[in-house]
Image 1 (tube, rainbow, N blue to C red):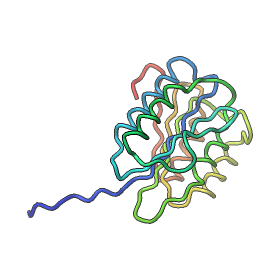
Image 2: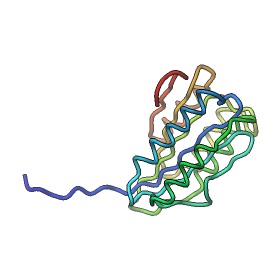
Image 3: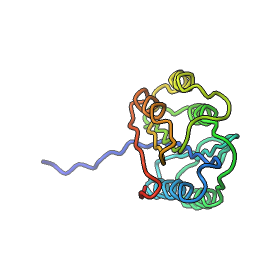
Length: 175
């Protein structure tokens, strides 16, 4: 066959990391490692957002960041500074992850990493899943649960509705 240049679809990736108190120790290290691995996978045409949550929801920067060398280095420093404290506001984090629009021609992905069940804000899994479904639009949602205390049913429902997958890790496993 003729040699054709491959065409990659530029991605808009949102990484959402749980930094609640139960994520302390090995789990927060796994989350940081996942974040660094994601940053290393980005191409110059990609854009990204980093969101961390516990009782409150915070972002690396407002809006999208281009995957430039400077932004990637700053994002890695941000990841290294994450500390585990507080409760688990899953709905607030999902709402923040699903608000930014993605223009046509880009692949919108949400990677959601948590070790627990919702304890702050909305705590009913069915209400959280419905709110995420209402906001999701064309985004694909991939969930990652760490440890034994995760609400597996919620993460599976979010991934299924979001045309993604749910992956579960033990604290000793590598991301």
